[in-house]
Length: 320
Ligand SMILES: [Zn+2]
Image (cartoon, rainbow, N blue to C red; front, side):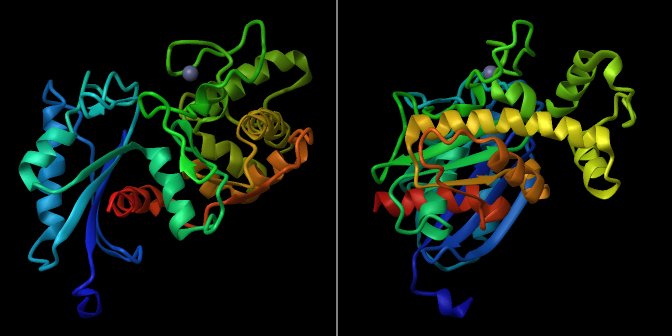
């Protein structure tokens, strides 16, 4: 990329539960090189993931002549800012993954660490639908559910970088509601509406319907969230549609709470579940969202799956 020489670059790291992605990104947001690997799960200690990331950064830099301005990391949470990495993450088999100090020692450049949704909302404001907007929320509906919030032009971090853990908002108020994957409560949004939990919510919903519903969607152990969306979309299955209507009410309830909490001008939604089912997810939310406050613009992010990497890079640009 001759045209990019002379510009500045950052390394972006997206540490996810399933994959680690590392990219070399120009200030313009142009992704010059990107590699991905499954996140290492074995080895007994989180340092194996640290070493994996260091090796991937060396690979992606390759023989690129540019000076690196810094390394931006977007990570699964929750984060421990004092120690510089994710601590007791429900999505990783290690108690702690050290990130900031080992990367600083290896590369001697500024390092930024944010949780993945906080990084993503920075990308939305800098490169996506949120340009010029000072109050916005980015929501991911994926394996888990999370959000990043910019309020009054500032990223809302909280004391440990974990503000806006909206996946653990209590949304259902069911006396015998579903337990959440965090293990710390019932009726959390993520316990119903994340990619991992939608099949379980479907089984629970069917039981609640009792004899009213004779199941039409096969209910075996292999049922995935995408099977339910597919049954509704491609085959017009009425039961899958009724279930997705129940899911829409849950999503709209959570979004209503988010609007009341943060009063945003814009909400963008990403993550694998939303990106694969844009219309069903958006229409469901718009149908049931509370009108207590003026409903902001709600749309799917135009940045797709790259939003987290772009956000990790945007965080470094913000530091300079
Ligand atoms: Zn939870």
